[in-house]
Structures are given as structure tokens and as C-alpha cells.
Image (cartoon, rainbow, N blue to C red; front, top):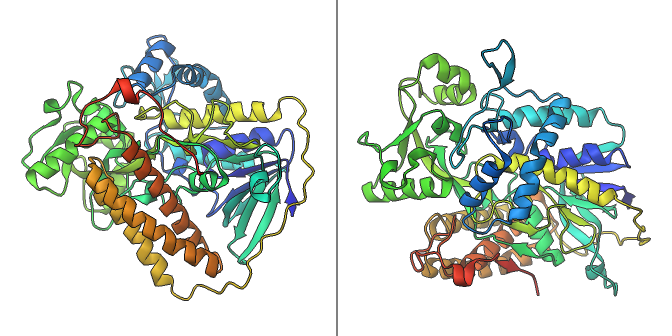
Length: 530
């Protein structure tokens, strides 16, 4: 058993920000199942939403967030995160993060703010079209310099260790985590009174996603098994514009392209968003994604097109260098031709229920970033609020977890026991089940849903769960097996939450209940393992 003052699961903006602050107070272990730079943060193109000018205001940012959230945002949480934004951004720039600047006409520089769907003002701080990579790189540089932080790469968390699981007659508390060392195949025991889940989202539960391969919903699944409350998993945001190309998977075409004037057209070159919403291409993501889905189904086309060719070529190459170069590698010159795009799973608005400080229903377990459901996003996330939430939630969780003197729980944790398990003899079964889950979710639990499709998905997922559990108990754990176990759990949570919401709201749209019902469903969907 190894002991730390803080254990952080995940190496995105939330986890790294928390770790840097926590290292002021004690030892920190960062557990990440691939390399430390593999995270949703590193893939984030758009930027960080933050009020930065006198033309904008906190009230406007709050109003835009509430409007996107379709009635389910917790206004006190939204206001806290929005108003703390500028202070946290200043800390980030102090760590060396560089956001794009422009001349303001008075001979001085100011932030070059972008605009994205659902925002009524320009408030998106960005580093070209690779903002997440810039943030991730600078935070990792600071992490590498800190003697109190140990980064455990290629280590995958298996389960939280709780007093409830150990049979102690006390409030359910998290005491640490079991972690698989992928190099040795040994499950190690890590002990701490403060464990922070910053594991990101679950995009890989769907066949098509903008997320990296690491996004398998691990934190939500682990928290569910530990007995934590899970909230609003029916609200999965599909990004409207993922590159449609046979050789390039999961490449996001940033919303900032539409923010800078890009228009959506069908295969006949006709613009169609004006028929769906007055804001056209700058409508909230749920509206744009459903409009594209409807256009594709109506015409039978495999994609639609995002056209920014009317802008100067030099501007396009300068503002969107990553997108330009990636598309060019695929034989697409976006200065001359529209970009083929389709919607893809992008962001989990639900997650482990947590307050604005990251505290969950399990003592000692914090959840921050995309893995958490704090009430900021409601039924639909406003573009670029996620990196902001990761920053603010990390700071608040640090303050909460270090405030006052905590009584250390003196418990020796049992080692992981594998029993008489064998090596997995049929890896093809894991691969097959993985693909089945993702295809099932795409076909039955996508942008537009029905009870019949959801019930079919629930039935098949119950069978898959039984198969995976048999594998889990009879074979040595591997990363692939653990990820499959988590995927099935998270998929079931999405389906169960969706079946319980008999209305359409935000990202959850069902043909059986196409109207919003504030009388019965103006509330969070809460799930807890019995």
C-alpha cells in the first residue's frame, strides 16, 4: 500500500490544475491510464469562455448559459463559475499559457476573443485552434517541475476503495483506489483521504465521437459501483461538426469556424439552418446537431458541408492552422472547398453528482471537470464553458479539501486479490462486445430517441453486463476488459436516465414525448446503485 495526501485520477485541465495547487500542501499522485498528455483537454480546439471586456458582463454570460441549459442549470453554480473565471484565467496565464492577442487600435494588445454558438458576445479565449493543447502542454511543464507530484502513466484505476465496501459501520467514505499497473499487470493499492476523479467523459460509448480513445466513462462507472449519486446522464452532447472522412476519425471541426462566419449547406449547396432557428449556424449545439441529423435523414446524404470559403484564404490558414493542415492531409483545401461534416458524440453533461466544490455523496471523493455534474451545464452545455469549469472546480475542490484540519482515517487497506483467475484467452470477445456497445448506442440512443429503441438497448445491455461480469471475475484484469466493463455501465446509465425522462429537453429529444414538460421534469435525473 502506497500513501499520498492527494490522489488525482486524470490528467486534463481539472486534474492537473488541482494537482499543482494540492502539491503546496502535500504529496500528490496523478494516475493516468495512457500518457499524461492523453486527455479530452488536449483535443479541445475552441477555447475558454470568460468575460474579459467591458462590452460583456457576468450577467450576460450567466444568461447565455442558462438559456443553453434548457431550465436545468443551477443558477448559483453558474454564477459562481462565471464570476471566478477571470481570476482563474489570470492564474493560467501566470503559468505560461498564451492566448491569442490582437492590437486594439491604441497601440496596445488585448485578447483576440472568438464567438461560438449560444454566446451573445465574443468571449472565447483561444490559442489559434489548438487551445487545449496549449493549456495541457504548459500545465504538464509545471507538473514536471514539482518534486511533490508523482505522475503514474499507464496506470488504470480499477475501483474506489470505500468504507462501505470494506464493511465498516460508518459514513461511506473513499479511502483510496485500486490501480492496474499496465507494465506489470499487478493491481496496486493507493491510499489517501482525498481522492479526486477528473477522468473526463464517455464519448467512446458511441460509435462516432470527437473524443480520444481514453474517454470511456471510467470515473462515472467507478463512482456508480462505489455507491455515489449519478445525475443527468441522458444529456449527451453531440458536436454538430465532426470531419466526415474515411481515413481520419474523431477529428473535430471547431465551432469557432461557424463563429467566424462558416455556413452549413446540404449536398445541393443550399443553406438550411435558417429553417430551424433564428440564430442559424450560431444556435446552441443541440439545435444544430438535430438540424443536421434531420437534413441527412431527409435527403439520405451521408454528411452535410461547412463552408467558410467566402473568407480570405490567409485568414483561414492563420485562424485555423490545425484544421487547415489536417484537412489538407485528407485532400481537402478548406480555403477552396466546403468541409464534409457529421454530428458525433462530444460531451457528457451529466456525471457524478457534485456541488460547486466538487464534493460528492461519498466523503473524501471529489469529482471535477467533465466527469462531474455540478449543475453548470443543465440539459445542454454552452460552448467552451467546459475548460472554464475545469479550472474553477479544481480551485474550489482544492480549497474545500484543504480547509481546516481533517482527521486522518487510520485504516490499513487490503491488497487486491485475484484468486484463481486466468489470462484472457479470447480477446476477440472483448473487441466484439466493445463494438456492439458502441453500435447499439449510436443506433438506439443517439440524437433522436424513442422508448422502443431505448428499451431494446436496455435489454441488450443487461445481457452484455452479465457477459462482461463473467469475464471480469474469471480472468485477469486488463485495460481493455476494464474499459469494456465501464462502457457497459455508463451506457446503461445513459439509457436508464433517458427512459425515465418522459419529455424532450435540451440534448434529450424523444419522438414519443416531443414537448418540454416543466411541470413534471424541471429537475435533475438522479440515479444511485441499490
